[in-house]
Amino acid sequence: MTSTDSPAAPPAHPGRIRTFHPRRGRMGDRQRDALARLWPTYGLEIADLDGPCDPATLFDRRAPLVLEIGSGMGDATAAMAAADPDRHYLAVEVHTPGIGNLLDLVERHRLANVRVARGDALDLVRALPAGCLDAVHVFFPDPWPKARHHKRRLIQPAHVALLRSRLAPGGTLHCATDWAEYAESMRQTLTADPDLVDVHGGYPPRPAHRPVTKFERRALTAGREIFDLIHRRR
Ligand SMILES: C[S@@+](CC[C@H](N)C(=O)[O-])C[C@H]1O[C@@H](n2cnc3c(N)ncnc32)[C@H](O)[C@@H]1O
Picture 1 (spheres, rainbow, N blue to C red):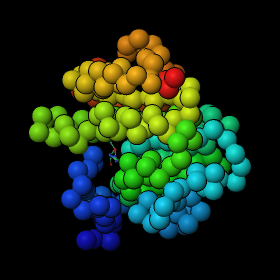
Picture 2: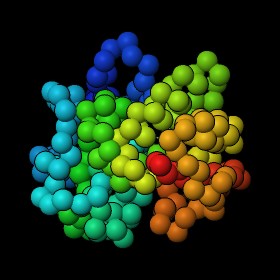
Picture 3: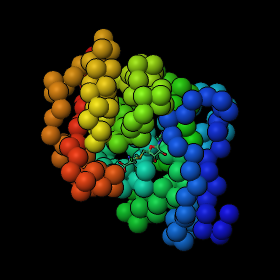
């Protein structure tokens, strides 16, 4: 490991099928510095959870909570949180440089409504109380294109049932992907859930409140179409 490497995230439950690629990442000085200084205030280590997690304890006041799974470098999280100060944003990532980057953005933009969790988002969601989320964002989840890897996809029936159970009635599950086959699989999975309603009856244009992410820019440059899916809990 060089001085700019970060350790790969530890597997929370060895042997369990994971939805993310184990990877090491190079951490910039700015990200490393932000992580060292800001993690104690804004960070939550999912592997340290020892039972239920009350999200109200993470913030100083009460507000509707948005959970973002796989926040990547955190650009979308920071932009959405800045534009939406009356809701809290809890971003979850396993990739430490991305977490450092988001913490840097939190400080630079003085965002009081963001917290960052490191680890497997599904473990965190299991620890959250039912109905505690105003929205769940899953933007450009790893597509796992090979059929033998589809079991690793985040959007699959059991995970959707779990996420939906943590949404408040009327809360939204917003997914986006640049992978057409995954989009169709997501659409079928989401519409098959009897407690979710397809808000737009298909793929709406990108809503103005969802910023273009790094992965999306790359997909657009490569000429791929983007699919948003927005479902609401009954
Ligand atoms: C393709 S990237 C997209 C990142 C970002 N949303 C964007 O649009 O730029 C998917 C991210 O999801 C993260 N991820 C996948 N499964 C996860 C899980 N179960 N818990 C936390 N993060 C996860 C990966 O580490 C990766 O950074």
